[in-house]
Image (cartoon, rainbow, N blue to C red):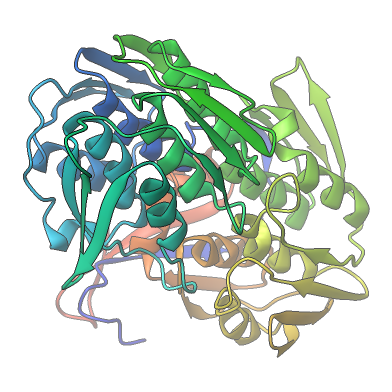
Length: 442
């Protein structure tokens, strides 16, 4: 029996080569929900978020918000937020260190209070994700920002109580920096222009959320966003967009198992690059009823892909698509341009027999007829999904360890796959590693 790390409490056991069939539901977008939760700080009235996914990262964000005085109440996929009595308390480092998105609170807190302290963030070890663009943007708006002992201290300079509008050019179209500056600008005095802004769907969702509270934002989804600050925002009732990465992952589950499946709800435009690449590989992807996708399988062939900011191919889909390419006929080249350390899943796919060679940020994938089940370890969130996909296509049994990564970003992925017919179950590992207790999974 494989020895698991002490922190590992459960594994996924997958019997491969089982066909899938049917339709499954797509949860709210993790990357959108987290920033919208932080955006609730901007409003001193009650706000409601709907379609919130059930994730470890969402729970961590609720704890971080509660630590700075936000009152929250969750009922299923609905979260009520009241940030009327927020204070200067610093979010605990042990929470912030586990969640990159925790840094999103700096913009709203600075806009509401004029000062804040936020520890530097943590998250997946997929490469350097510095906050310098966030900091420079806030400084351009009149904030004094300094980093001491791992904590970012920010306050509005001088006697002014509000941030000031500014013209800000981002050296890189960072999603996090765009979101931080946009949130801070909603309550700033005057007009803020963000040039070379990120264009991801999550940016549009945040802008729509802020507009539903009375913010004045134009251009979200383009490379130039203009925010005209207002004095205060009002309550709202808002639904998070569907998760395009979850949808893309499940589309690949259909493709890699040669299965016809349907997904809903989705926003097809958010998946344009993924759909285009899937069609290059072979499967048909049909858009039905404007918010439903149906995948019809076909023999798989190689293709090349390069990760890029939206509307390019998303880095969050690179690992999953590489799993598909391992069983696609021919030679493929995968180039990762967004994060320098996001090919760590290669070694685990190789354990399953994949023929992959890595040079720098490029992976050369030679398709093989089939993968072989093996014990594998997830190295980050999207790598965990890639290993699950590989297990679905492999001959024999695959054991996926490191599920704390998977649970950060997928709302009960194994239950959705099981609904489609996958032979997959979560297994609880007891303290006695020679004794595995099979736990019930809802």
